[in-house]
Image 1 (cartoon, rainbow, N blue to C red):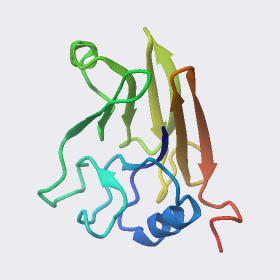
Image 2 (image 1 turned 120 degrees about the vertical axis):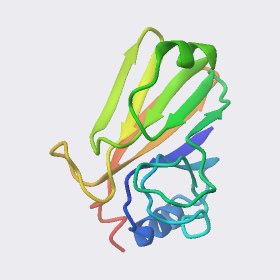
Image 3 (image 1 turned 120 degrees about the horizontal axis):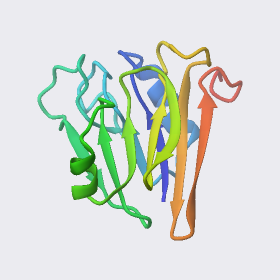
Image 4 (image 1 turned 180 degrees about the horizontal axis):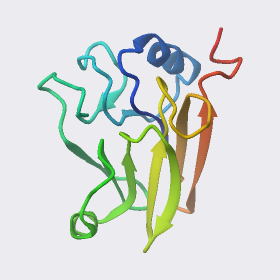
Length: 151
């Protein structure tokens, strides 16, 4: 299972379109909120609702099954451990902070792709590729400033 994960695009739908063209064979395109756009404008991405999203068709949270366990996707980084455990979470993906994150705590991997509109962690504008198989997973942070994106 291959996922292209973005967050906090804040109206930059052009970059979303470019990413979808560069990565045409993803199993899932996931936006972790604050697109500031409706669901039609960010297709093929599905999205959770961020604090700057005012369109009614985004859920606050998504549970996505994977070969290793569930992804729990939310815009916000604060979720109770009971909610994560109760949803059989293996991967907790969030946005909001505009900072990349990759850490594992008590068998749950916490991931944030950073932001494709405004970085707050000293890295370039970023997104993430997450590949999950029955044998494990691989996380790659990518820069929106890569030459392959700037075409």
